[in-house]
Length: 177
Image (tube, rainbow, N blue to C red; front, side, top):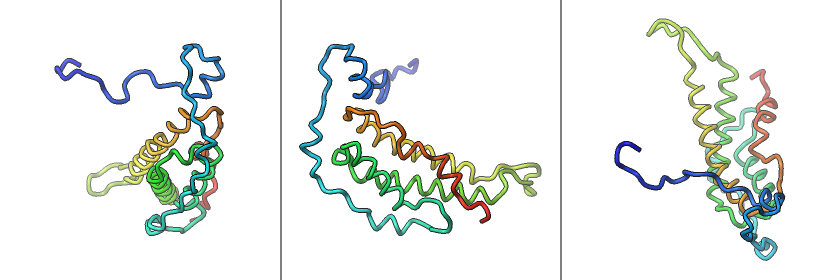
């Protein structure tokens, strides 16, 4: 950078390849990949749904609640064998943010995206759109904390993740309001 504040930036550089991809390519770097013994630690108890999340949810329609998202994420992580490596706070953060995203998206789907602003004169954009974008971005960042652990420590590729079915869940909403 031209401002004289050089140095290593967190997250800079080429991202690491997932372990499953390294194993499929036959390990072109010739360095032995780090493979964790997942079977030894798989006896860890499954974390319970934190009841404090129920305080933040509003169940008005068919969108998934934070409890639904929590259970779906925990089931996916159990299938990967990486549940014991994930901090439960990461799952909690992801479930709360994604359920909030669905709530705001539901609210926007019943209102107009743009409207006449009588105070300023002209057309204005619904402020809920900014909220949707922010919640989606934050939920995506929370998911990446979880997915990084899974992709770096799993020998298999699991295809679609619970985070990937976003459009399917959005289309399930009851649009009548």
